[in-house]
Picture: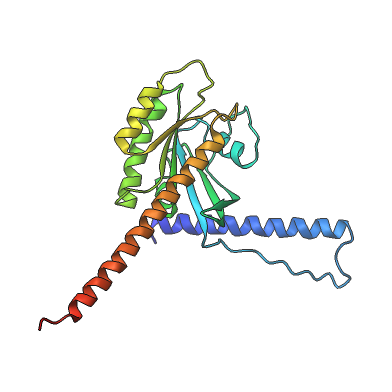
Length: 244
């Protein structure tokens, strides 16, 4: 069994345990409020992961504000204390391309100790946010090997929504200029934005822009598919023609 399989099983078990604890908590609350019927039977349905989940994976070194950005967007809150993350997943129901879908945001660890987990997150991701702190040039450098792994796992990354994000732009101790961030994004062929999870600057815009990139990619794929079908139809008709 490969390390990727072990990690995937671990993540599924962790997800299943979290659901089990949620069910137990619900039953305990219902018992306390006398809301259960006398036969103590209750039917709960645990929803599986939806096929229309749009998975966004957030990468970056420890302390750059990955979790703060995600929590600011999902819950509208900001925490001052730094709490290291192994991997957390948040879900937000949104409207995308006139359809309701679930935005699944995976907040990854800033540590380099879990390469198998990192590759698994990349393989399942639809879009990627690469976060550095504008107060740390080193945090920008640490994104370069992550970008290389994304390229390796995904193969052709042309059209895959990737956003380079310079966080903590409210901090006066800047080490990375806006121009440097833009140049790095240009070399990768991805979008760029500076944000502040603390002041909520550009946080909503970050995810909106990412979804717009996905919308353009989807439209492009749709047009290419439509073009391919038209091409096949023409070739089929051409094959039926005979010269008199």
